[in-house]
Length: 131
Image 1 (tube, rainbow, N blue to C red):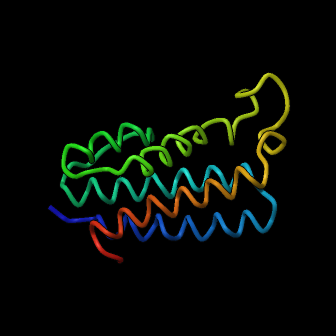
Image 2 (image 1 turned 135 degrees about the vertical axis):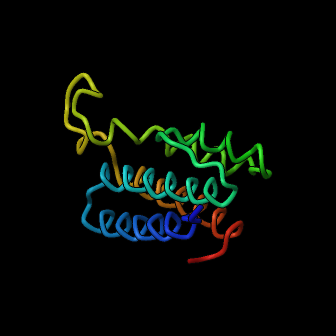
């Protein structure tokens, strides 16, 4: 079986960089979504490392799978819980009664999302090393 953990982690790092570009461009909803994706890919890297590949996008479920193999710090769980909320409403106008996602998210949301995604990526790097 081919080990793809480092590939998942490398993609997570690339998406984090894209998140910073989106922040600078004031595309805050897309920055939040990109950070969710970066965290998801970092967690999937950890799952690959433990040879428990996972499907789906729910960060809380990915954390549960990982917690069966290693300790997951509470701050990391909270970061994932915040990021998990950005999977759908950052992209779809029907997630809100009215208004486009671009009108629903703000710079503070994007900055927190970046901080959270960085924490998840550091967790993955500490477990499997940098690509």
